[in-house]
Image (tube, rainbow, N blue to C red; front, side, top):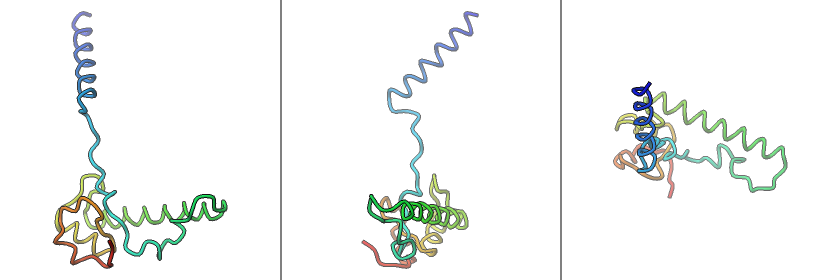
Length: 119
């Protein structure tokens, strides 16, 4: 009984210390760094202003789902892990499919494969 209490106390204190010192953080989501070229042309209702009709809002959500599914499909087809990222070849493959990196670009030399002009 004493042994169980000691193990439990040590486990809880380790957990508390890890959370207190910013430990146990989730990995960065590499998929958030990618945007689709010509997104406004392909999915025009994604960027509707607030206060639009319910029908337009539903269409916005539908198009957002289609865009996100396309992103997942393109990344997995290229061998790119949406959470951990990927290597140089996977990065180039995703760019060839119409995506570009808008922040945290670790392979800037792959910009030559991008299909559009952007900021």
